[in-house]
Image 1 (cartoon, one colour):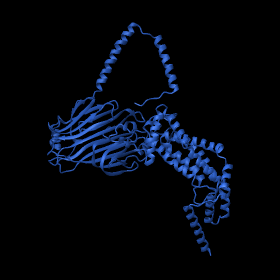
Image 2 (cartoon, rainbow, N blue to C red; image 1 turned 90 degrees about the horizontal axis):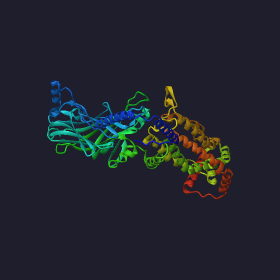
Image 3 (cartoon, rainbow, N blue to C red; image 1 turned 120 degrees about the vertical axis):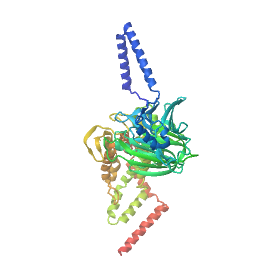
Image 4 (cartoon, rainbow, N blue to C red; image 1 turned 180 degrees about the horizontal axis):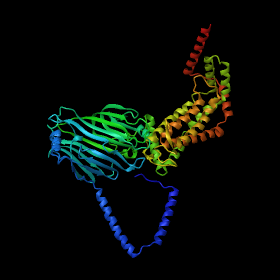
Length: 620
């Protein structure tokens, strides 16, 4: 369970409640007769609690025979499955559960037909199910020696429940005879999302046709868990570990298929929860497919994507033998990192390259540290402040470049007027001025580019951080989903059917930030081929308003605080740190110094001069 944090109001509330209870107990002390009645009631409660505890012990439901009374139906079944008709045909499920996970395994197919998270609920307070009501299937396709094409999902298995220390062990056997069978063996550990799963056969040499293909089939439709099905679907995808540790995924935006070799595990990731099939020894190959089931935002959509995997199997000595693992649980880095044998934490997509590295090894542990003693929303604010302070030197360099360009504005305007009919000469003289003044027009872009890895890493952090799931802050009920201050009676394309406040605040902040950063540029004459900064200044906040309305409110909170802090930093730089008179004096000094050209600058100057000469020659 996730630890809850107490603020000062909660502490005061507990103190007041405690005081009131003490006063009530003092005023309402029970009589001896009442004490005797309470004792009897307590004994009833303890007896009921004991019965409830006993009920938690995994047990096999009493098999409800199907068609056993119908001799024709029984005969038809046995005729269809051939030798495997030895198994008693009966319906029923076996329950396996620990403190975190509840499973039901069906006699038909020997497969998991229900997987429920005990400690998590969906956005509408329904328990989180990864498998339920036939959304998943698992089976082996094979051909028998008498040329029957069979799938284990159609066979009946006999269950046998036992224990191995503190572990629960369920053996499901599809029998050919008492000592010949195909077995699925599940072993559940206490307080663990990972199950040992053994698939093996005994005495089936000669029953299974080894000359025909044998395929393991695993299919699942992702059950919706989040408030926005489109947002959840964006992070719902097949991921796999293959080819000696390579991690890749199928497209999350469209239908996709892929074939891989040497596969270690396959993850059907559903944003914050995942179903994983892992193997002790790698599968030789696997064919994977993903079908998108979401076309638009709709509250009635129940499934996100349809996943499927086909894995060719081979017999050794005419027998099956596969040591596997099932994982049904959260995509929580703290949980998944416990299974370092498989590297299951890689099922979380932190981002590409350096961006993912920063997200995984810097922001994820840093936020976990802050949220261990701060409320989750405050932890975001504190992390944002520290990140912006760390990047303040870069902000200073960027603003210094803008200040230098502002000082040179009169001279650039003069050049533009003087050579307004000669674009080549105008460009040549402008570059010469920059060279003499020691100013690079690109120096303002470089600091911004340096910040991109940080911004992108944080952009990936908020949607993938399990720590933010269903954590509230101010009016936002869930920092991993959008906040809502007003529900619209209609849906606006690309915006949605609700109004989120954090994106509005972030858009206002970015507008004022861009006013500061682009204001000087807009005052300068627009250069041919350069973007219209005024247009960008109005477009960017509008895009953020639409784009982030359905994104995680934690991300919008970060951008709001980040831009707010950046505005204060830039105002401080402008009013208290930079002196434009000193910058102007320094530029004038730079002009007096002889400027040595490097090879690149010399080559560029010669090319421009040559182009100018060719242009003059063409006019003669």
